[in-house]
Amino acid sequence: MPEESPESWEQIVARFARFSGVVGEVHDPLTWGLDLEEETVTGVSDGQDPTEERFLRAYRTFSGEALEVETLRVPATEAQVEDIVRAACSGALAAPLHADVDTDTPDPADFAEAYQDYRSAMRAIVAEVDEVPCESREFVVDGAAQQCLRVTVRDVTALYTSAADRALVVTGPADLVDRVDVVTRPIRNLLHGDDGPRF
Image (cartoon, rainbow, N blue to C red; front, side):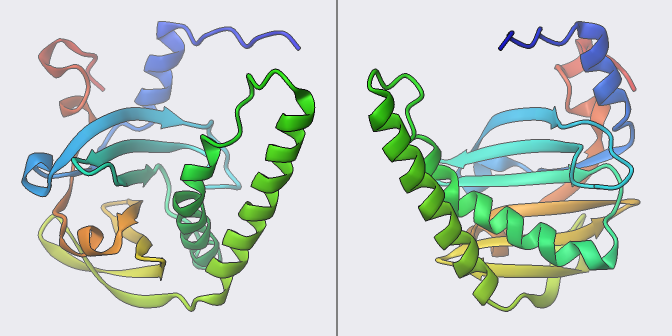
């Protein structure tokens, strides 16, 4: 299978330009013991699936726990929200499994066995998340309480809430999600300081 060619600078700029406006982030991450690990646009524009294209800001605590703030370019429909929340929680719980499937394993049989174990573990995680009821609560964005739908499994919380004309999906340790200060800011303030592109 041929390798995908890397995106050109023009393609990257175009992807970010589609997110012109505000995106979510943690205000003053160091206050919460967070270090910004990644900032990227994932996926492609899809009119049917609002989660296909996201602006992701991924943080890690000093103790190694992950917290993510994702901005959906367009809000989801009411019927889609619960699936989005459950998928985010399942993904967060499954993240440690990804490192266990080593694609460079010399013995294909070992890889196949690891992959089957991974699939079994993923199914178990999804089933566990599906058993826990989602709850409607408040979540503060930009200093104002917003309604959110959330689920917590094994002390990992995922939630969906509105933000401006977009939506946020926040995932991470339950106690940290409950305390962290999430704000929305123009994307131009988040890209490469004063020398980056302006959208």
